[in-house]
Length: 93
Image 1 (cartoon, rainbow, N blue to C red):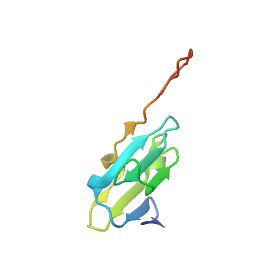
Image 2 (image 1 turned 135 degrees about the horizontal axis):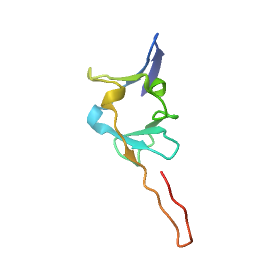
Image 3 (image 1 turned 180 degrees about the vertical axis):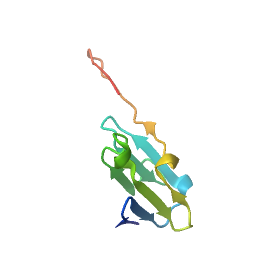
């Protein structure tokens, strides 16, 4: 379960039912942060558009119900895989 609270400088996202170790973070080609909870196949997920574009886009605090607090400098993400085809593709991140 997710809930968002807006404060003066940051948004707080309250996460219930998951631990920080269950957050699987991915960065896609649009610099979005995609968080899957539990597994990458889980339908419990959160997308923050353009999270990695500017510092102001990362003014989020993740507050988990076990008391763990994660800020922008605690969030890292692996790039989503880029898959080509048998054709002459141009691939970039």
